[in-house]
Length: 141
Image 1: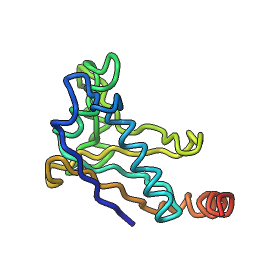
Image 2: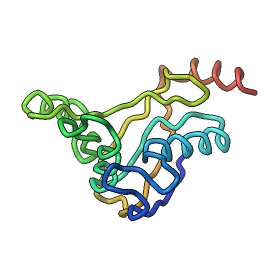
Image 3: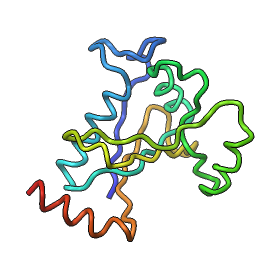
Image 4: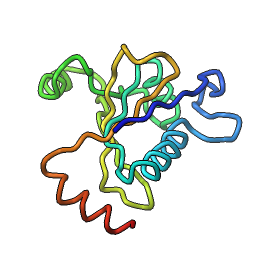
């Protein structure tokens, strides 16, 4: 399951706020809610290019030391090994806050094949999630 969302980067100022006073992470949260309402599953992967990751970074306090997104062309283990050699600490995952449930991770994947001003939210089933997702689905039905 996946859903593509588009935004206009010119709608956000240098602090990452749009005209409605929302940070880009607030907009992402709205997309998470839409995704959940449409598919009955939490999106667990966020795909976007470097430009979008920088927009996220602009809206987070003290984010000048952080980078967003695991490099989608490189496996997770290699990304973690690179992290130990980097000056800044990259952020690969944030907890979703859908309906107050902070136990649903949203993995950020930097993918330069994703068009500018485009975000793809996906739900990718993990074997260990089968039991949990069944419980979560029944809880919200």
